[in-house]
Structures are given as C-alpha cells and as structure tokens.
Amino acid sequence: MKQLDNHDRILLDYLQNHFPIKAAPFLDLAEQLGITEAEVISRVQALKQRGVIRRIGAVLDARALGYHSTLCACRAEPEQLDRVAAAVSALPGVTHNYQRDHDYNLWFTVTAPTAEAVDELLQELRQETGVAMVAMPAVSIYKIDARFEMSVKDDR
Image 1 (cartoon, one colour):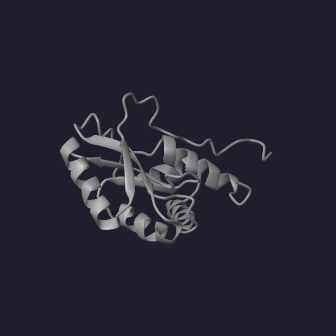
Image 2 (cartoon, rainbow, N blue to C red):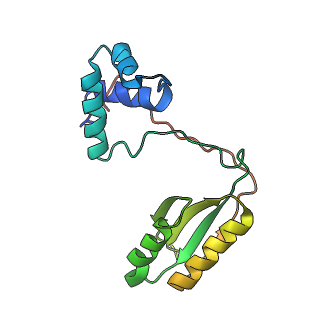
C-alpha cells in the first residue's frame, strides 16, 4: 500500500466500484479525479505492469447464465506441482489456481456450460496429469465479490 500514491489509491477505488460504461471511460475517470486522461491511462498501465491490477472487466454470475462450477483439490507430488498447475491453468473456465499446504496441495475452481462439461474437463485433467482429485461443487454461495478499499486516509 505504501508504494501507491493517493491518486493511484483513488483510481483503484474507482476502477473497482465506479467504472463508467461510456465511450471514453478513462476520460470520465480523469474528469472525476481531476487529472488528465493520459495520466489515468498511464497509471492503469503502470499498475497492471506491477501486477497490482490483474484485469479490468465484468464479473459475471456463472449460475445466472446457467453455467456449472466446482471447487477442486488435487494431490500432486511436489516435483510435479508446476506441471500440474500449468495443466490446470490451461483449462478453459479455470478462474484461479492455488498451491496449498495440505495433502491436496493444488486447489482451483472450474466453470463450464454444463455439469457434464465440468466432469469431462476434470476427467481429461486426471488422465493428463495422473493426480488424485476431489471435486466439491457448491451447495450454497454466500459471497462472490471482493473489493479492497484503497483510498484510506491513514497509512497504518
């Protein structure tokens, strides 16, 4: 946080919470922030290059679209972890992929148009990698959005 100046922090808040759906969204942000459109674009590019911003885009509710999703856990040997993680990341519909300190040491979420399509993707992954895998489809969803308040007034 201390590497971000106040303009970056406010810009991140706007990008997360108030991104304008307009023909020139960065110009609109610039006007709201009191800086130039070029500065907004430059700051966004710099934040993306530094890895602060992963992507800018809509977050869709897969269930509302009729898609099916499941959390999965794999048990990969440590020397195979990078290879298995790369195979997981290559799957269409994988939103994230994390190593865990657990017997099942690689966790990810996969989404596809049907439950059968999810099962097919997971079966192909099992065949390709040879890893043990557990699929844990959600029964209920309680939260699907995370926002990070960036423009806090004090830097504790």
